[in-house]
Length: 242
Image (tube, rainbow, N blue to C red; front, top):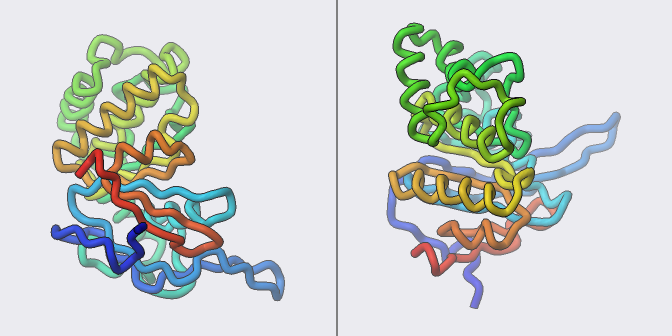
């Protein structure tokens, strides 16, 4: 039998708590509900996938988790803080310090080299240039690009660009990593390498939430959340990662 919301229990600290989370968009006088009462916990060190067809609400949910948008109703607790009604400046600070983003399209700055791209978030957090350069060099080595630090994104393969994006996401040692179709623009070999890196990060204790259409990607996670029409249709535990 497929577990429902109340059947899923993982006994570790919840770093994200969503309580009756709702999100609507307004077109003139018309309301378009996109998320309809989401109740979810994400636990420290957990690796979770979010799946669902186009229009199911998974991208909207990811935007809310990433503090890129606010809920219309309900609560979002991140590390015990209620961020549901924080102002833009406060949200920006939370986003920069507590959340690491990995995008399908990499979102690297083409004019900057690898080290400079990794340093971006540290720059905005006003980390001293000596410290941020040291941290960026360490992360470049960690993702296997220590010998290409002077290269710009256009001189790298897709897989290498995604490695830079992962290093950038790790720069501030965030509370959670959010990955949006992280292998969507990669060939199968590069995709496997990136998934292997996410496996290693999870094994090292990182909390990772990944949006994916690919059942093979989802099968590597501990838990899959299946969305439909703005609601959680079901959750499944993935035995290979238990």
